Length: 168
Ligand SMILES: [Zn+2]
Image (cartoon, rainbow, N blue to C red; front, side, top):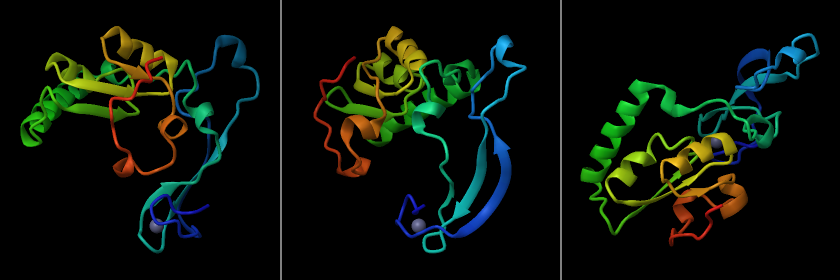
C-alpha cells in the first residue's frame, strides 16, 4: 500500500488493533447467530511524510452502504459547532451569494444546511442513500456518489467547481 499523501510505499506499522466489523454495520436479529465479517484494523505510518493512515481491507461501498446508519445531525453539539463554523467561514472567506460551497462526504446535511439558510449555493457529495436523502429533504442539492467516482481522482484543489449538474 502506498501513502495517501506522498505515495511512498508504507512499511512501518503504527498500531495493530486486531480485527473489527465495518463501522455502522449493525446486525439484524436473524444475523446474530451467524458468522460476522471482520477485517484487520491496522494503522500504518509513512516514514517519509509521517501521515498516519489505516490500511485498507474493505471496499468503500462496504463501509458506506446505502443503509449507512451514522447521521451527523443526531449530535446537537455537533450541529452547534457546524453552525458556528459556517458563520466563521462566511465572514473569514467572504462567502456570499456569488459563492458556491461543496462539501465532500456531506452526510445528512449537518453543515450545508447553514449555507442554505444563508442563501448561499451549495452541493453535497455523499455516497450513502440514507444520509443523502435526509440532506435532500432539507433542500440541500445532492450528488449521490463517491467523490472520486463522480469527479475523478484528482486532488480537490485541482478540481474546478462550475456548478456541476449532477443532482440525482
Ligand atoms: Zn507519505
